[in-house]
Image 1 (cartoon, one colour):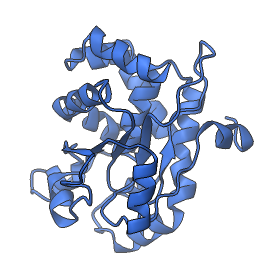
Image 2 (cartoon, one colour; image 1 turned 90 degrees about the vertical axis):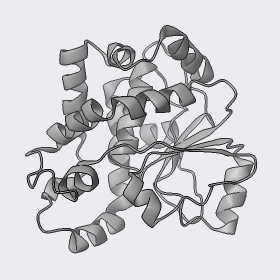
Image 3 (cartoon, helix red, strand yellow; image 1 turned 180 degrees about the vertical axis):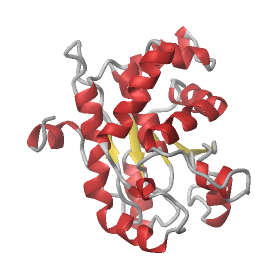
Length: 248
């Protein structure tokens, strides 16, 4: 797997004061040698702590849509700063995560024994949410969209992977984007681990390319490819073509 300058040139860091782990997922070349357009889709961690300067940065990026995929509990505890913000449509589309939606609700005391299984659980139990997310991503009225969860690594990483796979980006480049969160989140993840529920598996805070690759393999084996998975949850060919036109 390539590291260093190729990756840093492909995926541009975006500094938005008050948040972190933010980058443009465009600028990378797909398998047909098309460079994905930049300033279309931006991935990030939570925007709840954004500063006045951060608001200005978002405005200057021409962001007109924000998709918040945190759980309902996370949204209630730490409301998004862009709710009701003029000129930016805000969508709350909670993606279930095992800790908040299963464990804390007492539905199961055990976690999946690997992170790959956790990721598989996420795509199998968030079909409605993922369909809604992709319908918005494909909407041609939006110029620049930010999608985010809390730390911007797992749920955001899965959505980003689905986008990039749909656009025929190689697994190698998708995994490079994914593991870059490890560098961006080291201090934060270390703090989270110290405070973590002792019943939570250690893998919950890890960022390992093999976990996302395991999810990609699952999708390929069970759905043939990401396109077939998305069609199985209600994304149609028109949605796919509109999304492609945005970036290719």
